[in-house]
Amino acid sequence: MGERSIELTKCKEVLEGYNLNRNFAFNAVFRTSIQFDFDKKLETLKIKLPRINTENDLYNVQKLPYFRLKFSLGMMSDIYFDITHKDNLFMPFFDVDYGFSNLIETDWLSAHDLIPEQTLEIVLPQWVPEELKVHYTYLVSAAIEFGNVGFAGKIEAVKNASCAKIMLAL
Image (cartoon, rainbow, N blue to C red; front, side, top):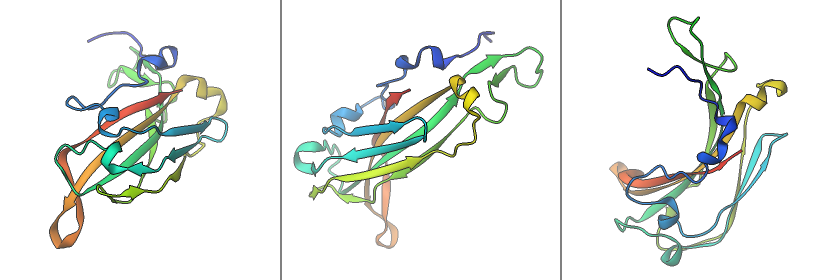
């Protein structure tokens, strides 16, 4: 077991652009640009989705009839090695939590349609004291999930038909 601290705040750029799927990169599946506007003071993220032409902008590998987009805004604490804690040698900088996030998702959308542009917003709870925020990294991630009609006509996510990416690390 290592004895080093993990200070993401010193190397945020390493995480930005990291794809969370082995088989398909997010940008290969969702082929249009998403605009992110982050207000660090208010801890709010505005997400502007352009008009989506699913015939051109989606790579729907399994030809599923529905998709939705999910976005997350979170804060992740630097983690320090501390030999004085016998139960857990790795502690977050701020004792309350290692990190937290808020998630927003679109409704299920038809994978065979023109989708009008949309604007979404995520707000984080402001409970971390301002002086401690230098030890947190803000992460913005995006995911696409494909679905099919399931039991009782409800749309359900299809296993292994999704991908995600860390879009920003601030």
